[in-house]
Image 1 (tube, rainbow, N blue to C red):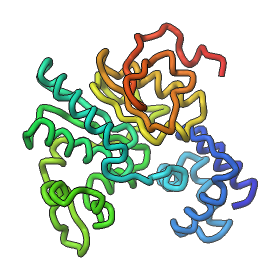
Image 2 (image 1 turned 180 degrees about the vertical axis):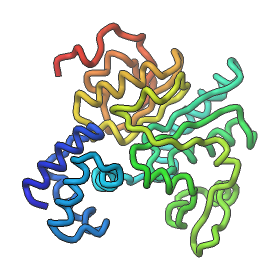
Image 3 (image 1 turned 90 degrees about the horizontal axis):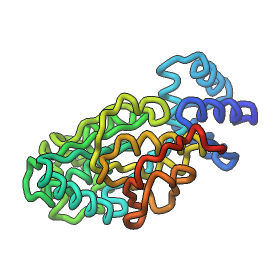
Length: 274
């Protein structure tokens, strides 16, 4: 990837999904390009040309290059315990709870939420719903299939794995059971431009491993949108390595990387000098 190509990719990343690319990611993008079959400079130029012209398929392919989809079942397991416990309290008071996995990638996070909820409610049909969104349509297609290799589900306890995953037709593959599928709705959403398509309120929002990639202004605006979609007593969960930045005035810490609304401030991120 030439300097000029990286500069073009950087501008597209910022305008399309708010991702701030740094020079250290250039080699990573080069490797990802080759894995996607873009083997020469001409092929990359063609992709960038089409993406700049607004071609949907080119932009989706570019998003495959730009977004990190490393994930797994029950990453930071304490978050799932807290989310399920909070959802149970909400359902007892209001009859139903809603949760949002805002960067669902290939589905491990929302399905982990579904497992935790079924276990905590002690019911295969708990009064909850999970919205799972991601900007990458290809990742969401994998999530909707709900099929994973043995390596992916190998981190689960055997009893949990056998209860919630059945053997798939392909060897060494497992597929989520219908009880999990029923709880999760998958939908493509670009967090920097399409949160208006998401209807709140949510009792729990997972926004993990995405804020770290966003440019500061976009990170602030995304968190402001989430504050407006969070129930007054709701929980926001981010990755422990992430921070709220200039949106910290909207949230109060509850536990490690878990926040509650501090009270909607009249100061918007747009008004903050970044």
